[in-house]
Length: 280
Image (tube, rainbow, N blue to C red; front, side, top):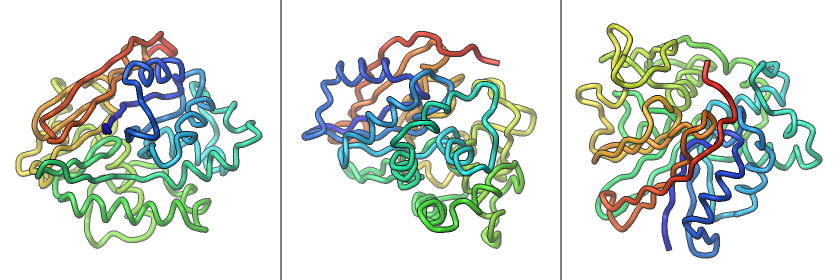
C-alpha cells in the first residue's frame, strides 16, 4: 500500500496514464492525491476527470484555480478564456456528474505519518495560518462549494482583494482570501499580503515580497506542505516542503511522489510530457 502525490496535470491525460503505469498504481491497494488543476490548458481534461473519478475512494483531487475556474464557467460566472480548453467537459453527456464530483473534492488535506504532519494544498498557505487554521479555512470554503449557494459564491470568487487575511473578514471577502491563498498564492510579504502579478521562480520575487514558504516564522513550518501550482519553481524537496508542479502542460514533466512510512521517505517518479501550450 502506497500514498502517491501527483502535481498539476492540466488536462494532459496521456502523461497521467503513463505515470500511473510506471508507478503500477492499483486503486485496490494504493492511495492517490492529485494536488490540484486536473483540468485546462491541456488537450484532454474530460479524460482526466473521468480517469480520476473512476478510481473512487482510492483517489482524491485538491481543487486548484483551474478546477474552480471550470466550475465558474459552467455556472455562468465567467466566460471561458482564449487559452481555456474546457469545452469538451462542458459538452459531455456526464457533465453534471463530473462537476458534482469536482465540487465535492477537498481544498486541503492532512495526514499524520511517522510522527509528522503532511499538509496538502494546491498553491500555498498564508504565513499566519497553522495546519489547523488551514484546514478550518478550507472547510469553510468546502461547505459553500458543496452547498446550495455554489452559483452565488462563484459570482464573487474572482478578484485579488482583499490581499491579506484578517480573522474579522466575513462573507465573500473572507472566502475570496481563502480561495486565493489555497489556489493562487506564490509570493507574499512578511505580513502575509499576497502578490498575484508575478509568476517567476522563487529566485526572482517582486520587491517587498518573498515565496510564501520562506516567510520567517511561518506557522506551518512544523509540517511538510505539499503543493503544486508553481511550474517555474518546479520540483523542490526539503523537510518542510514538497513542490510538485513540473510544467507538464508546458512540455516539462509530470511528477509523482511516493510517500513512505515517514515524511522523509520520498521517491520521485516522472514522465516527459509533450508541450500542449506555450507559456505567455
